[in-house]
Length: 118
Image (cartoon, rainbow, N blue to C red; front, top):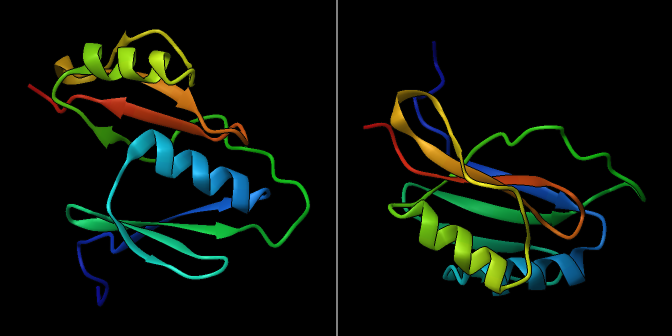
């Protein structure tokens, strides 16, 4: 196949772009690679996360997360989310010894912080 075995970018489309992008900047604190008008790109290890305005007035969030943010200490990550008053689910076990917790952006998108397999 001609496509590479690599994900180049992850996109999150936001209805209330201005407010939600500030939430992402505050909660994650990732380095901003580029920000122009209605575009925000975070520089992550191995890929980028791009926030874009939705081209519709309403979006129904997926009922699951499509990727996860890696953490070495899920207990500390969970507590940081709670301390920032982020809507977060309890820590749970995942296959291969992984532990993680789902949490939600202001638009209801489900995000996941998780440890890697043992």
